[in-house]
Amino acid sequence: MLVVDDDEGVRTSVTWALEADGFAVDAVGDGLEAIQSLEGNRPALVVLDLSLPGVGGLDILRRLRQTEAAQRVARLPIIVLSGRDGETDRIVGLDLGADDYLVKPFSPGELAARARSLLRRTHEYSTTDHDPFSVRGSGVELDHQARDVWVDGAPIELAAKEFDLLAYFVDHPRRACTREELLSAVWASQAGWQTPATVTEHVYRLRQKIEVDPKRPKRLRTLRAVGYRWEG
Image (cartoon, rainbow, N blue to C red):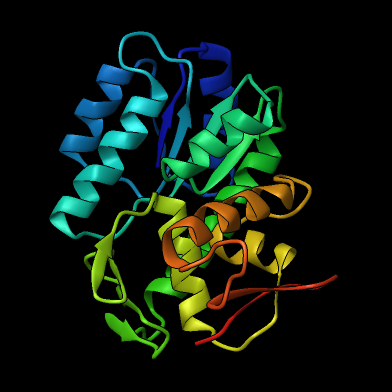
């Protein structure tokens, strides 16, 4: 596991908490060290501070996800740390591919618990029998391995979390999905960590790309007082 934070106190407390949970931890203090460490040895999970000297955390996150997409390798679980708690900052981090988001100050014990949960969910998803190329008769085609999407035969570009959200819907057709379920399944989080408005915002963005008329969605329907349903 790799911890990236320029605050020595945070690095130490996080490292101790994770090691107490049985994780082997490497800790670095800036973006360049993080990139060098990731190029040398792929960890099981990354704890990444956004405010780093030199290469910033968002740049590292973007670079990692682009490399994974180009090489068609499994996504590395990433928990982002930030001193900013605004909704916009959270959405930007999650859009770029973060799996969870913690605002400073935080409890190292809570971070360790989230790391365990995220690793468990990542393992469960990777060992589930997914069809690498899914076609669901709704005009949407999804390639899980290449992370490519076509709508009515035309390729479209999706942000990392938009793809993850669409993949979950496509893999669970005609199922009523609550925002809380989606936070848990797609963000490996809970409503106490990210607001359900995060799901609402991502659904809105997704509809702009997959619906003929986003104001009257036919593929991704809203269920009042419940959540959403994919009409696959």
